Amino acid sequence: MEVSKSLIALASLAVIGAVVAPALAGTKVQENIVPSSATSPPGNPTLSTAGKFQMDDKGKVQVTLKGVTDGAGAPVTSSGSYASKTMPVLDGTQYVAVFRATFTALGLGIEGAVPVELKKGNGTGKFSQAALFSLIPAGLGRSVELNGVEIWGPLGAGNVAACTAVVTAGYSVVANDPSCRGGTKIGVAGISIP
Image (cartoon, rainbow, N blue to C red; front, side, top):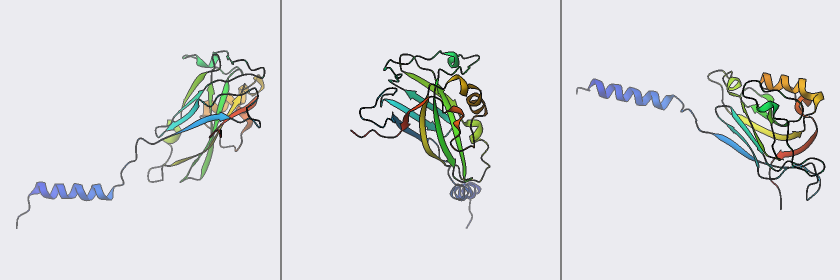
């Protein structure tokens, strides 16, 4: 019985396809941002429950904050200095989303920081962890566990240099790193119980 070369090639590809693990693509996590107040309804400063934290498998992180108020209850507007496309600069008026994650195969915990400029209490901050994700060696598990998100602000002038270092590096390996935890913790990723 003669077997054609194309049938052998097709069978070989099928075997290779069964042996090579499929690449998972298109995974992402999205969480609601809710007030972290000890009272209900939350006192000022606070934020609304309409905010979101998102991270995808390419390392894109996006934080959307809504309804951020200062201690007097007025909607917050930050300076806009970090929104510059050519030279973003933290000046202490920004709010910062600090997220904790673990690269499960490496057992390595990190913290990342996403500065958010606000206008009338609303704003979006974006950050890329793609360079960090590319450091995971081939053959190791590629899952990332999100361990929590906290919203802090305003950052304050005293935290600008340390937080700039974390944002520039892309992450910190210090647990509960105080660098970007300036001002008041006004929100967390989670749910709000009615």
